[in-house]
Image 1: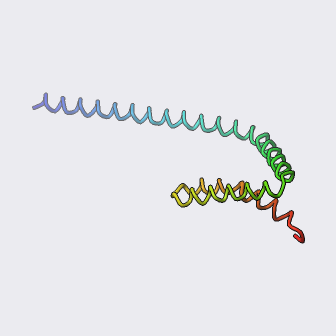
Image 2: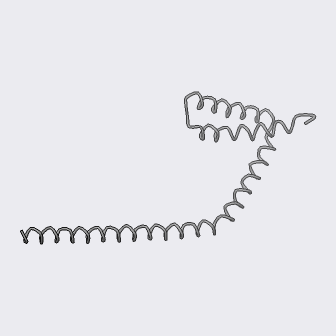
Image 3: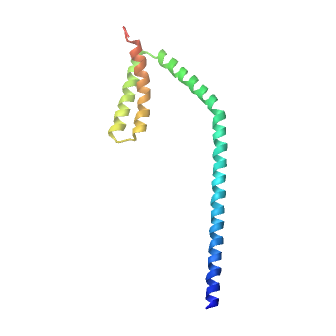
Length: 119
């Protein structure tokens, strides 16, 4: 009887030690992940101003290219992108994809509307 009690107590002690090691491993992993997140966030914060500046330059370049296109080309492009958007929507594509595909049509239509006489 005493031997059985000792075996039970030893088993409980081993279980507690295993749980303690698992807890330590989980905490260590969580700390590693938090450290990686901090490093990644600080790198992104450093690069963000340059990325925003590059995006603004690209947007200006796109706007200039659209302004230089003929009205016929813009009308054809707008029709293409609207048709592609409608096809994706009818096929049940993801709403975000449909919205992204509609952006070029909106940009082209905006240029066309600004060119309209009396606008």
